[in-house]
Length: 270
Image 1 (cartoon, rainbow, N blue to C red):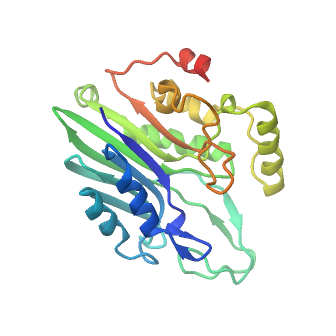
Image 2: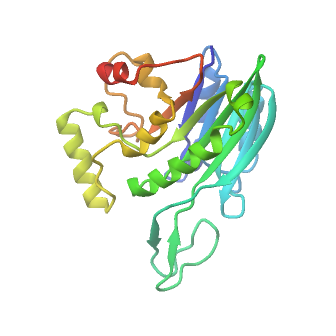
C-alpha cells in the first residue's frame, strides 16, 4: 500500500504570513507517514530552502521543477521511495491573459501595454523503484480558466507519462497527482453547481459543463483514486479553498494493470 498526499501550498504564504512551519507540522503529523507528497505552487526564491526543511523533517527525498520565473516557481514531489530519474516537461496549451501595464509578473518582468501572457504549466515526472516494479509519478497544476486548454494539457500529460515501449509499460505503474483545476459534475449537488457556475461567469472563467478534460485520463485507463475508494465516505469532497471549501480540484489518478477499476461503479458511488 502507498499513502499519497497532494497539496497546493499557495507559495507557502497566506496574507503575507509564512505557512511553512504549519504545513511541515501537518505533513509530519500524518500517520502512517505518506510515501508520496505532491506540492503545487512552490516558490523556492521567496521561501529558500523550504523543500530541504520539509524533506528533512519527513526523512524523504525530493525533486522540484520550477517551470515559471527562471526556476523559481513550480511543482515538487517528496518521496520515501528510491528515485531513479526525473524529467521536466513544459506543457502545451495555457490561457493567454493581459496584465495591467506596470504589473510585476512572476518571472520578474514588468507587463507592458498591449502585452499578452500565456499562463504556462509544467509537469514533473519522477521514476522510482517500488519493489521490483517501476513507479512513475507525475505532478502538475493545470489551467484554471479554460477547460479547452486543460484538455490540451491533459493530452500532453498522457503522452509523457505512458511509456511507449511495451515491455516498460507492463512493468510501470503510473500516478498523476496535483491541482488539476478540473471539476467532476457528480461531486456536486445542484445548488453547489449553480454557485460554481455563477462564480465562473463572474471571474471570466470558462463555465464548466462536462468532464471532458478528466475523461481523457479515464479513456487511458487512469482511475480517480478518491472516487474508487469512496473516501471520505460522505460528501462533500471539497479541497479548495481552505477558508471556504467549495471545489474538489485536487486529484490523484492511478494507472496500473494490477488495479482494474470499473469506471461505472465509481459513477454509481459518486
